Length: 256
Image (tube, rainbow, N blue to C red; front, side, top):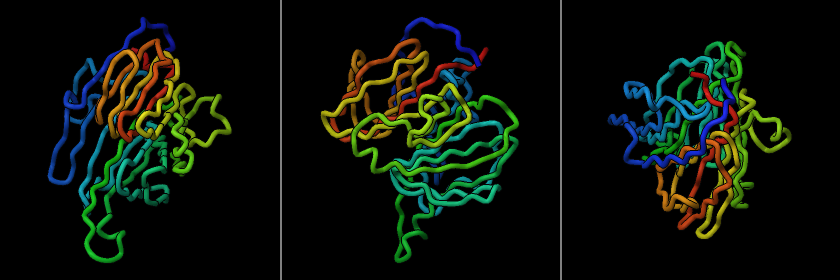
């Protein structure tokens, strides 16, 4: 990783500009190169390598598959996602619950929308909508791990809250820990008219998970839009309807 200085820049990326993977059970929009969608000019921003905006149909999902040497954070916007992995962890991820999986030396896991079964009675066909984000760890070859934390009540404040962080300044905060000391994910749920101020950092990535907002100096943003900030910050984001934003604060980037 590198902490070299850069020139200030704000790069708005619209929702419909993202490559997508669409199959019968999955609608996945990719902010960066992913799978068969490779663009050498769009591989990462800061230490963020993946920002996948996924919708999975009921009764479907990602079968068991491997990962290694990656910090994977999952944030559910709607519905519920069932997680199982080879370290023995299993559970349901739902809105307001942050999950981190450290792949380390290697881990197998599956993620499925079991809403049809979790309802207990009748047939439930609700999709699950979630954002999965990958950042590189400080070091490779760590022991795989898993952590989750519910912060639904804290989000009622409308503040921009750290929900996953490896930064020392968030020690003691209500946030799951990631193995990257240069990065933190913040989330805010905003009511119409509420605003938050973005951190000032060498690299920021703002993603609008749902709703519409206005970014100071850049204008309106809608669900699925993203903004990549370089060497700047402090801008205000104001909701024009109920909205949820995800903001990565990063103080390093992947070295070329």
